[in-house]
Amino acid sequence: MMRILSLLFMLLAGLSEHLRRARARGGLLVVNTATFDGADLAAYYMKQRGVPEENVVRVMLPFNETVSRRMYDEKIAAPVRKTLNAWSPGARSAGLLLVHGIPLRVEPPELSLAEKDQADKLQMRRQELQRQIDGLGPTPRVRSRAWRSSRRRRIPR
Image (cartoon, rainbow, N blue to C red; front, side, top):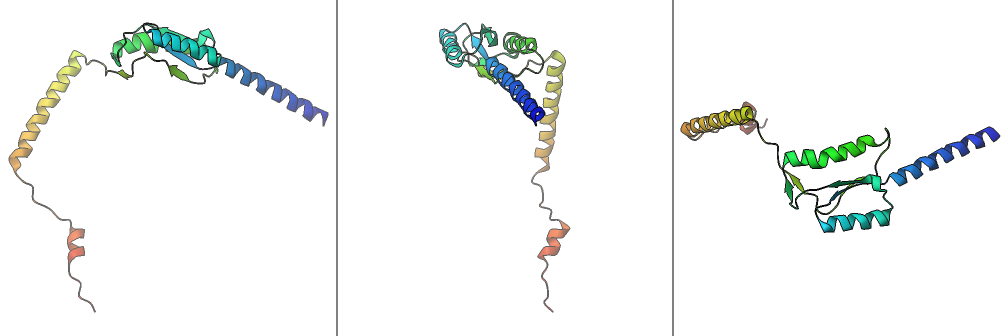
């Protein structure tokens, strides 16, 4: 009986230590330092929630709602990925918080020359097929055999 109680105590002690570390880890804040509102808001959030300084990723971006794919990859995704990879394996964040000033949208990636050429060819092919379809005129309405047989008049016996 004493063994079971000591085992249960060790299990609870280990669990509470794990929960304490998880709470201390907090969330990951991504802050645009180019805006005063974002930096002030992040400082207030960190103070209120007890978020440690190592959980803050500071980036410098123009204050726009949309950012290019290249800028997103270089200025936002890379620092966030670096911070998350620096954490010990198995460590989890409570969440990712994008503070005011971080762009809302990311533009699609730019096409390479080969991809642009392929897209132009596909667009021309689409237009050609549309002209062929338009030249056919209205399509006749074709009924299936099952539809025709269901419409036949049944003679009661």
